[in-house]
Image 1 (cartoon, rainbow, N blue to C red):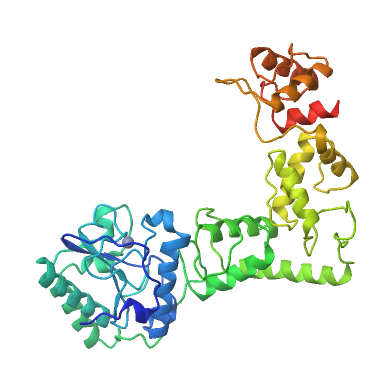
Image 2: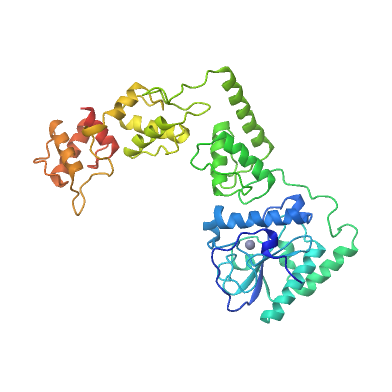
Length: 434
Ligand SMILES: [Zn+2]
């Protein structure tokens, strides 16, 4: 029984490998949710594509959850076609089951909930366990759920826990008309996808998300893996199209979600055709910047983002005025006590400019009374500013001590802002308004 090599499957090389010194068991896993019908049907190309997606998921999208990130988590995989695939391979530590990674071989059965093990796969698993016995002296089969609170790899596989049970099962399936080895009818597909799923439907959803929310902080390249980024992006999309996720931890994406997003995109496109395009921003020095469709982009936006960032608010740095930038603008406007509308017009530009040039202290840090005391030009500017606003901290010595803190508190109280003795964007904003 020769596994299909990881090279032939098209997996990328591991970043690191650690050898196994012993192997006391085969640890069995499944996909969780059902795999796509073509994968379950044992289509060789679909099986390889699926394994590449699993690897990408473990090495990038989901690397924290899996822990290793050095490679796909398992040592081998078995397709429902009966093909054995080399993943990490023999004698290499996996990242599939904490506590067992250094002393077992992890095998992924390429099926999930609601899908029955095929005779071919059962037979390959039996062969695999016998192979393990020859090499390592034990035919012990563990399941992921023996070690962790998980359903993996499901009740059916868990019940087939010896080589002879696996072989009997394969014989029974083969002699039964009701359960052909290769499913001739595709299993009924779940109507939705969610966190942890891979495949073409995930890819299609990600492409819609990319078009809907290009500037979202979690925007990412569609890759067919429903990972944490896609989850967060999905929740943001739901907010935008006013859908409610019944389970925010595992938002379901079905036909209704796709339809709602497509409608939103259609609506956008038709609005674009009837509305004048947003002002070109390259040829005005202080253009009105705001969230538009299509989004404004360019150096002016980038300049705005940098300025807002200096006040301690996150506005992104992409040069694209998207929802993230709008959020940063609103936060800045609130702290500067000007109209909070997310639109950068003359008033907001002026507020930003008030901090520009030589009137501006470096707004790189929060100022407060700490040990050792903060000192520097920024503290000195603060002290001068406090004095000219009628809350003198004493001599402007550039050291933030108790007298400066008390002056800050007095100033904050008189300005009607949070009295905490800490000088951040809000306090600076008030100080420079006076
Ligand atoms: Zn598992």
